[in-house]
Image: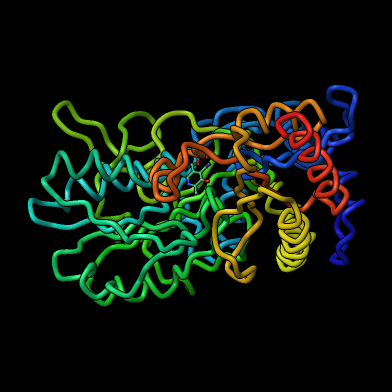
Length: 411
Ligand code: PMP
């Protein structure tokens, strides 16, 4: 699939997993916000890497090591171009968004935050953009403050000038919410945060999947993403950071690959990005993510976003017709990405999900690692249907039909 004319059936043909039958029904996969499926070119890249090129990177002076290093560093260049980073040196491989945020919390936070400093996050955050800051706050004496949510789960920014002040040293916010699908006005918040001199971390776990990311245009200091959400393998992600900040930060972990010289009593560090990549990295994962970036670039991010928008619009229209349906998140479709979080009358989301599963429809039920969001809406859990480039209107229809079964069972 290398054409720019978006053809969802051609896209689907690239994803072997989607053709399978589950519980006697053709699979409808609506859980891409948890993890996306992988297209053939990514699977082929992983296979080919292990079949032909597998060796450790950087250290070897033999052909396979050279090839593995080229593939690994080539993938870094692809990701840098994909998010418009000024240099591949600013792309640090991590296990995913969680590790990328923990890296900043640890290496920047522990050394730069002090008693009385403030960290600003939002109630909308995934736990991986809350808990690392709680841990750092507890160790440094910094105070955690929150951007609150309105009744549609959107950030309340009226009091941002109070929330952001000369004590605010760090702001960490998500680009797109995994729990509600909200596309946050992150660029405005970044600009305001930088006015007070705060360092800004953007959780791009969903943003990198559902928007065209340009880190230079966004203006933040760090951007974190996970490969597995954007057609890549699990266990590989990215921390993009401004070189001057990364340069000034202490290493996150010590070990091989990240040193320049090791002496008995101290060591000196390798340059960027290797200073942050201790140990043998997830080489195949990086190669697979590079292939995912190529795949998405071949289709075109604008086409992916347009397809998702059309689909979510259709899903919202159809779901809103169902009696007892409560949909969480912004009413305006312009503020929404490819996620629809809902509850249906008194049915428990886990029961909804179980019945949908029996109908071949995979959705997620739970708190979506966003317990503060659930608390905000006074629910313990929601069901969440999330869409990606391979989903169709027929998938939405199958979801709606399966919800009809839920209604018949629960009344
Ligand atoms: N932030 C958001 C918004 C997410 O959706 C996720 C994944 N659900 C994460 C952070 C954490 O990503 P990972 O588990 O890949 O590290």
